[in-house]
Length: 120
View: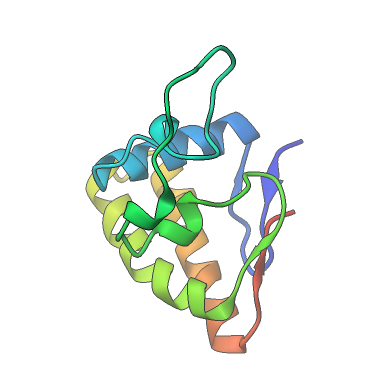
């Protein structure tokens, strides 16, 4: 059980993918728990709107962690920055680095084919 994607073998548990996204968001200066759509139980903190975010990773960060898709244009936008951040955040032998690079590869493959990357 967990999250898979079309166009790649990248896989995370749902909790693992949330931790992955929190880490890449933090690298971009974003605290996901402060963003609209990321409330934790009992959290009454006002949430920030996504229109304040300028990172190319925005489509990946502001996305359901269990379904949906990224368009070819979004994949084309996200993949290069995702690759940079993943390489900066995790050491070579880390699962999240390997899976993150596979996800970037899958995004590039989807964009090149003119297809959306599906979360499944």
